[in-house]
Length: 236
Length: 221
Image (cartoon, rainbow over all chains, first blue to last red; front, side, top):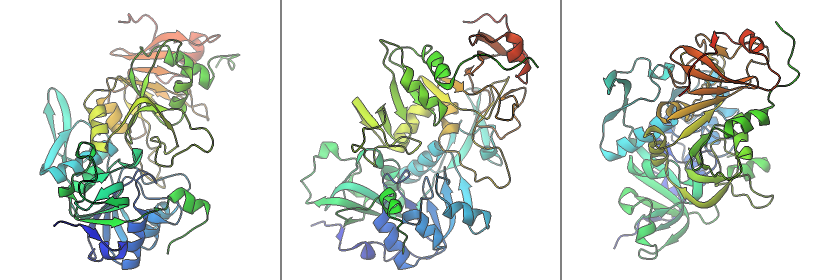
């Protein structure tokens, strides 16, 4: 019998080690696995490389992980958000490295990493500072740059529903990077508001098949960054 | 320079003029900021399907008070709604739509547009700036037509339409057409070409505020 459930967010992230590469789902607050991130802050791993589209807002979730100085590098497309000062302050102080990647290239690099594609050529960013120093090649009379797949040690994502086999459904635009990130890590950890027995989800509707998921933790009422920020919350 | 114009297009006026050039049934990505106004000026009888690159096709307007969903947002992270026939998808699929040439039109803001179609719209290159690019480079690399919607000059009065961009590029030779408060201008193999002047605006007034020559006799397709 397969049962990927673990009892707590603490247990789910217990083996994340210093220096690990961690993919974290979310586009802004939509899909951000706040409870898993908070558990990672409690756990204490440091020197992390984080792959995520943004860098969080306020003093909770991803921003709190950065503020705790657990992250040495972010691979990211848009590390600034209105009202977000944690990343800009660290970056200006030289305390964090940034690898800036166009959003679609970031998505495809993660997809490629998970799909066993080591690298690919894309027309995105040709002629811009983000293509400098990268190999390029002409295809169909157009210049393309070589981009490498990304893999991670761990992925943290948020689903709305999961089952004991690790199949995952998402809520609306909270899906964003999670389906690719689930494929690209050695250990993929899902927090889901609803966790059911295998067989209870419609197989036609499953977005992330369970083969990509290692651990499922039930977080019944996940917090939202905006609500926490409005309440003036900070973590820890 | 000639004196300030008595009229010209407002931001909504630019949006209304631009919307006239979008065919019925187009799949359109509206950039954050001023391009979002286009959605309020869809001509009678036309339907556009809006793509937002964070993973929704069939995006609708802002939600009514009390009906918003924090996980139903647009690329600017503002809460939105969905139209009948909407679809959600992941980021790889979303950028397959963009990079794969499936979208009909991208409307973007600009810091600078050059006469050769180069676009700079993500960074001024300032030392203390936090670099952030999002999906702009993918959009200009992949979408069939790229319209720029912008004020003709900066707040300081500097031309945004220039001979060569001095800010870091978003893409090379990617802009199709520019809609400003003063004029509609095509990017052609001969440089900027006038399509239309805004109401009450003289050509010389536009040329004086443009950093490269504008040709007026370009035969349009």
